[in-house]
Image (cartoon, rainbow, N blue to C red; front, side, top):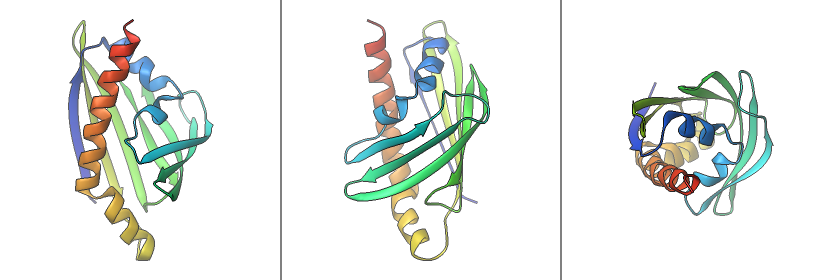
Length: 150
């Protein structure tokens, strides 16, 4: 099963990083153009909470439903219940490096669906696509947390 790992630091305390990710609007802030998230249902982050959304990649809609687990100050996991891949488990981990710096680590375990759906998911969610997506997310997270400091 393929795995994607990345990490980055943000100049913000652990509590602010966790609060940012707990905000139901965070998903909309973390996608680069031309990807836009249309939120259908986003429960407050908690054990067993659900997120249902459509990722619009240009004119292409990709419907997704994820359930959250392992929710704590130090991160959470979202697991795809329905979506473009055969399997997707995304673990977000937060670790305080000092009082004003937090490391965010992301690990995704995934499996492509067979057939045409799998071909599309390989193009969109292969290593190059995930690398670009998470480079944007690192920038967007730093930007959002810098704006939250005011």
